[in-house]
Length: 123
Image 1 (cartoon, rainbow, N blue to C red):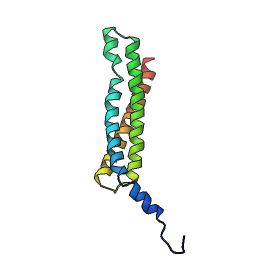
Image 2 (image 1 turned 90 degrees about the vertical axis):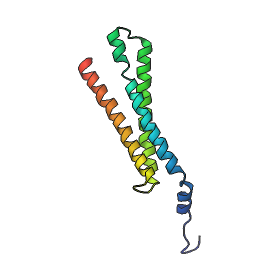
Image 3 (image 1 turned 30 degrees about the vertical axis):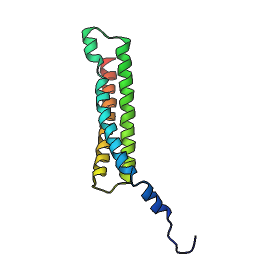
Image 4 (image 1 turned 90 degrees about the horizontal axis):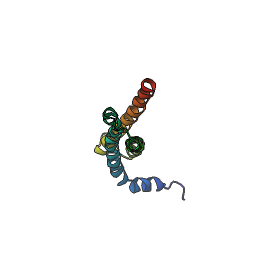
């Protein structure tokens, strides 16, 4: 490299990630939205318990939906943070990524807080 020459690696990274940020922001938003019904599905045991039909299948669905909500919420947070790094502030992709982060954090808070309440008061 010659003295005073411009390092092209920063330009290459910006060009390579140009199409990544909008797709990542949209994927993060989709994951954040998908985490909400998965979280809600983890409460399917309540009507079955009141009806007296609490089975292993119900608990398998509850466990699978809670794990799915945790994974999708975490992926929404990670993709949202990564895509915000490569987008302009205040742009559409940045807002999508921010909303995805908020949804992911909200699902995580609901999962942890409501499970702790259930453990403290119902065990």
